[in-house]
Amino acid sequence: MRNRWSDYQSPGFDELIQADGQARPFAHKVASWLNDLSPEDLSSREHAAQLAIAQMGITFTVYSDKGNIDREWPLDIIPRVIDANEWREIEKGLKQRLQALNMFIHDLYNDQAILNDNIVPRQLIETSSNFRPECIGMNPPHQVWAHICGSDLVRGEDGTVYVLEDNLRVPSGVSYMIENREVMKRALPEVFRQSHILPVDTYPSDLRATLSSLTDVKNPTIGVLTPGVFNSAYFEHSYLAQQMGAELVEGRDLVVDSDGYVNMLTVDGPQPIHVIYRRVDDEFIDPECFNENSTLGVKGLMKAWRDGKVAIANAPGAGVADDKVVYSYVPDIIRYYLNEEPLLQNVPTYRCENTEEREHVLNNLDSLVVKPANESGGYGMLIGPMSTPEEQADMAKNIKDNPRNYIGQPTLTLSTAPTLCDDTFKARHIDLRPFVLQGESIKVTTGGLTRVALREGSLIVNSSQGGGSKDTWVVEFDHPSMSQSQSQTQSSVVESDQPDLEPVQTPPPASSKE
Image (cartoon, rainbow, N blue to C red; front, side):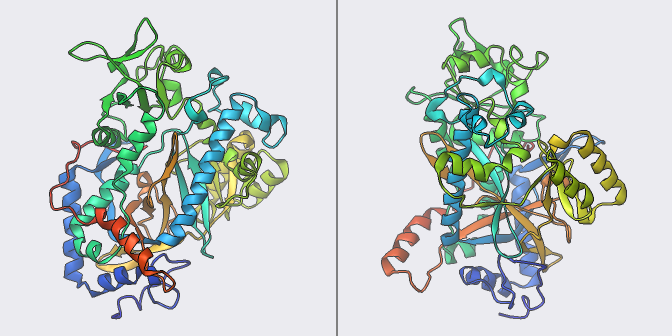
């Protein structure tokens, strides 16, 4: 290669380039192709990607004191590349994790054996803002509560992959994973012909199959319940509804009839809805059961669900496991229910509800990352090494006032990936959100949504906090030990992700992300 990579430096583990300046073997084709592009070519490809994003109406919303701001989705055209052999091991760990979490949630709302055996403290669950007593005694189909999970993964400086957190309420971002791929096919079509990149476009059909498995009705009608066009993730709601062939509905479009079934109001009269993929938080889905002032939900929906007359994904109450304090117990939860060792590691975590661990956090605020238990989007957290004394003092007060609500973790040097910055490649920190589906069976997306901290040195990857995204390429690499028959099999698998010749059909412009 030319000298383009010789000046590239990473502060830790880089996903594409090794410490000796050479591309990782499975990413050699990609790195070589990028190296041969002139600055003009790179600029042209970047412009093509931005133009496609604008034409496809891919946007996201930033909430601020000055109002909600709609912006075009930020995509860096340098892909994040993962060896398919490594990915298969990560996939096993993600399946193990969601299976155990669903067993945990089901136990909490039924026998509570894990609480009786003192594996997880009973007080932790009873003080959880997402534990719903209204769900006690429920037995949803397949005993699955969290049907869609987005677990955030990071790689540390030593190359170890960690689970940073689990998102089990209304995890978002998968539409951007799919749309990133479509944009990249337009901007870098040659690389798709040269590399064995595994496809991601089966997700909508996999999601529909998962939702359909929650009812005995053949060819069920599925409704995607959205808060409406002003929600930050409305783009995703409309996208998934269109791609699945589902109905996009708001609470005002649905009614529970006198027999307890959920119907959609149409010009042809009420039509039954069998499965609801809800993108509305628990407290707003049924004003009869939760927030009586909510106009986003459906009166009587919880009773219809409890009576088995409609399926809801994710099920109400699943958010009890979407808690960063509960997260710290997941390794024990896996051992308890599956009698297995966790295949994916947690980041070491200090629970501020524990006196000794709380003192450690308070004494090391300048070096730890401190997070509230139930916030998302990077809000409310403290990154110690980048914080001011005033911010540390505010966090110390918050911890002392409500220790149950906070955890502390060491500040990891997240892995990096080359990112295009003014026609040059610079290392920027990244994470990965794969999506796991569980219904009758468990499926994992091929890779996921890679988020990148676009500001130099920043560890905050959330789009709401100035981050961007990358397309995630899981590539089959012909290892020296691979047989010819294995190579041929893999080649046949990836054919479906060659660039499309026809324009991609997309939903109307809207906004994005929870």
